[in-house]
Image (cartoon, rainbow, N blue to C red):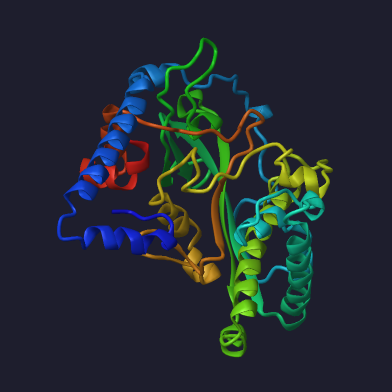
Length: 366
């Protein structure tokens, strides 16, 4: 029996320990039976089309080589250490408050009659610890970026060794939305944002990994101060996200350069008012976490950043971001949502997995 609220646990245990608990157990079974039926009813309401139909309804755009931006800097670039004082300017404070279980937009949250005072105190404390982190270099933020020639093949993106030989370095495997759409609305897949192999053109795609690792001094000096430890760890998460935001901006304006003239405020940046996207494995548009391994291997991320992956593809240190980079002007974030058995089998085949293994990693989408 799942008890959401710890304060109710004692009552549940008491009911279970009664000599005759049949009435209570029966009520729980009835409740869970209703939950199951309601869930199954919602599943059947969503009509899925076949993978073949979804692929026919892909995003169709015109492709011309002169309209495909070529990166100013190609291949892999390692960033030994980002300037923390620069990254501080890219922190999204709304998510800082969310980490403390305080919901509300920054800076409007300060005017909230209920949460405002607490939010202000947390923010002031965060500024103190942010200055401490920068001055004492308690966190080291670094990263690695790769920009490669690429073409799409079905729902895969082939990362090429160069623009001449066509040798495939690795493959990014993606899923396609299979929901029934209104006329004119495509069933999207991230591969739609890269020029197809059949076009004979060369497109580009990128990926990066950034981390914000805590120094040994933090663990040693603040281990007994719970509040300081929690604050620094939450700020390390925000700094990792800020590094991703900062690096993506430099990609758009400098390393890839497809938006060299971009001039956005911090607020506009945090609202993604720019061309291109940087979805991460685990995002709704690319929900398979195993793809992190493909990115890590391509960028040699362990050697270049010190970041790692657990057997379940969680990143270490936890303050890390791993993402793809697409430049297509129509690229946008979307939700793959539920997929059919046909796509599960197709994806397993493309990933060289058993269907059972693919089903394990894609369970939320089945």
